Length: 288
View 1 (cartoon, rainbow, N blue to C red):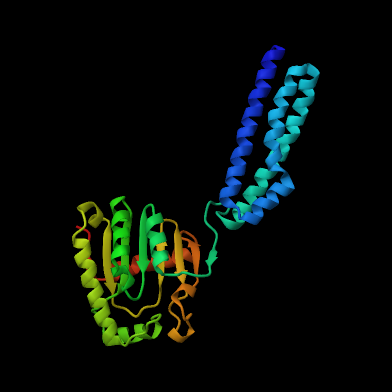
View 2 (cartoon, rainbow, N blue to C red; view 1 turned 180 degrees about the vertical axis):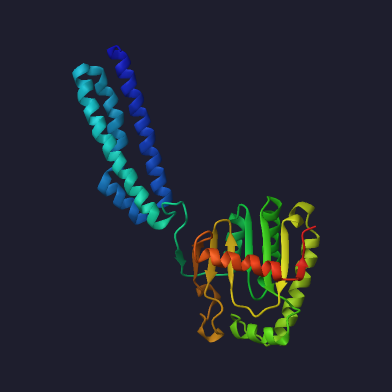
């Protein structure tokens, strides 16, 4: 191989390394917090690596000895880049997926089952969005139903499980004890459930067939004991279900956990939804 061919080969390697460094920097921006990005730049000097690699190509034109010296420098820089990559992977395992690709547990301190929560779950879902809840008031809102219609139209399967208006008085009595604010007596709760069921039926009946095929709503008639959302590979469980006085005064202050759907305890919650769905015979909206 001639000296010129060797030079072209090394220049090609330099270009690849520049691309690799750029990719690593982009991934760090996407995955790390602001403080972590600053720490990486300080410890590893990622911002200077690309400049040093670009300037290396200039020295290749000065002769074979310089090219060999530069080769050794490039090997050293490759080791430095590998170290950065391992550091990024380590931080990713702590905050994102683990070694098996499963998402780790994440605590979100505020916003459980608020309008922004519903909107985020529905708008970001790729395959499915399941909701297990007590009261259906927010689901009956026009804005949220429009978001669900758009999601269902693009192929997201949406299923809702809420307390049925056909429940016994005893079930509604227990439900009223754990409902978040505003707490209502059983007879008012039954009326709210019934009115919201009727409104949801009316709105969904006007959807296009594609959207309607991906939307189902059933009412369960057992005493409520779980409350969560499930989307794609993630379970989102809040701390609803305690007695009402123990819950935060503002709904926005309710925290929740994000759990991997295929690992415990998320897998148990996921099976609970599937079993309860199969047992729930009160169909409010069925797919055509």
